[in-house]
Length: 314
Image 1 (cartoon, helix red, strand yellow):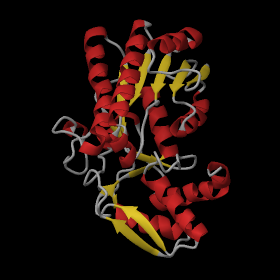
Image 2: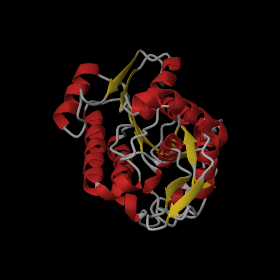
Image 3: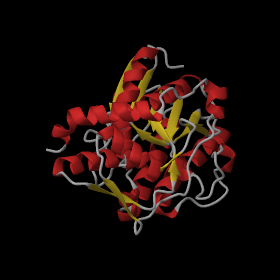
């Protein structure tokens, strides 16, 4: 489906977007265009129309999102809800209006109910309310699934909805105000080493579990789905394992070279108790299976940060 097509990637200058565009180049697309700030504010309908007028895409892959870790979600829940809802709803509607061939929507694991049985299966998506600290973000992204299914039912519009788990890898966001757990931990380790500190503070109790998905694997999954999956049923994409935040912190510290004591600030929230996806549907529907184990992926991410942190910390 991607061969000889004009593909537009929203958020293409972001962390996942840069890796995705690199992989799309092997699919013989006619063109690959990026829609991102500052050229386009995708919360504004006039900017979306200007984008589609300029590039006339055949396929839209919507990655753009306002996103962050637990602290950012607690600080800006209204912005996270409003901006993400507007982007997804307006982009998909305008894509249908213009008879664009396919719309690929990226959701989030935050859309799942707080106490979803592990591993998370797509059929459990509506069986409860999301974890409170990131519910506004998760629900805003989840509305693209509702829209996708409604537009397919009424209009025959070809849109798909993918549910990625927590991403990490080279080029991640290391800004402590909005970063997720892995880049935040890596930066904390290097900062502690720089200060000569023998302690490192981590949030919560460390008992929550998470699944982490290497960004190159995520880009491959999206390409495969964009190329060959054409149903509105949601599909999980992930690595299919879980690790406690305590074990993760110890692993990141060891790989980063920090050998001091980890102190847990239990006044901070743990977030959702457990997260791990059932990824069997992705394998069945479009042949995806993650290739990168966590230790290998973390080592590559830490190596990238070590090389680039002097630029990131300016």
